[in-house]
Length: 573
Image (cartoon, rainbow, N blue to C red; front, side, top):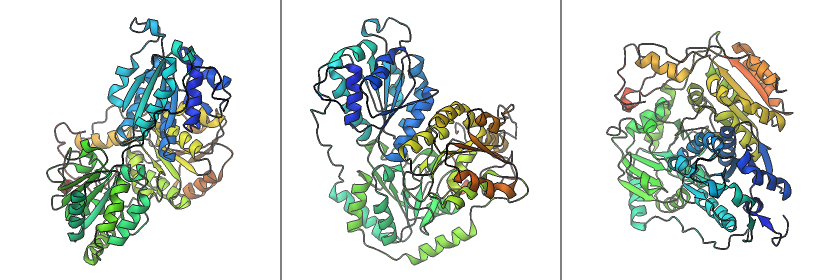
């Protein structure tokens, strides 16, 4: 970094401030309104590395994957107009999943604002529903302060994405302000009221059949070790949400995997039987709760969340604490009285034996077999990213995540095309770890152009394409709820994915038979000279079970294909 006395323009001050904040990468796509900022990356000789992507959505997902895998904010840079518009899906994905992300967008010059000038877009209002906060900078001297503020907002409390919109004349104007944070204030500690904590502790101590529901808040607050100790010391089994995978080692005997619509049967049965459900860092989303009136109906509900707006939003809590998960767990660990709970743990052991996850092993390659093989070959320690759909649910079921920040998946937004770009960001953030992207053929084709980015940077990501030539989850719903009337789900015209990847100079493998799965995956995982694509042609019409139809209670869980038609609750999706 050069001397703080150098004369900087707004764009150079932006880059220097990002250096002060420890930014490693900027994921971006250039354009007219951001030329001064891209130029500043060169003129400042910054150590920050620019990752030039093939699309703005890809840039946002890369920044998102970097943030989820490292715990540090991801940074994306796009131009005005369609550049900012293309970033909205990435912002929405990060916002729904509480991911700290900074989007820097270029803008028309200030004298043209509001005049419908070329590529002018009101980014502030366009992004408002899908960000934590937005800033438009109208003075070059305010660039450093705004950037520092944006990072604080993105990372404090419940994290989320923040937009910084910079008109081109502002990024080109002289900046005389300090690049350092001159108004730093310590964040107030998130602490619970002692009476609330004591009441929750008494409820947990009293319970004979408690269960912990661990959400992403445990990961965000780096509370995984505390959670492990608390669960083991008190003999309390742990269920995780989709985004909470990795908060507790899923190979541990106390782990019940994921719950909800496509959770494990034994986790769902436990929710029905528990007398105390301890939710730590989960927002009780609809895919977990189903019928709110019948959810965990025998249980005392304890809810810990850093966001007060989530308390009593979906499920009414008997005991609620607004707190950082790490702070709350630390205090609970001190005051909850240990208990053996032998009968409860024996009951759970029997449920696991009676309702294991399973799949048919026959002469047709299945997605479950590929994912189970990936788990076995990596011992559950790889960083795994997914797209959205059937493969995502099977990956959540059969890839048992052992460590924090090793499971990256679009939860709330359900964004197809997330997996492969997110894997690029994760691999850059964690270069020494194995990163595996698991995608369906539908989701992969939404952002397949980022194969170029992976190839250019020779990133050793393993890109697994599970090709059933369908939008599988939609087809499953059409089969179960719409008398098997298929509409808009057959992916006719899929490419030869090996030839596609080879056009980018990427190493490829092709699996069509079950008996070659393990050996081929083993060879692909060992390849480290750049990205590798494994094209798996899998069974077309498998369905994901267990399944709780949307809006219905856990009493309606399907363990296999229904023999009679099911009426879908009105308005459910």
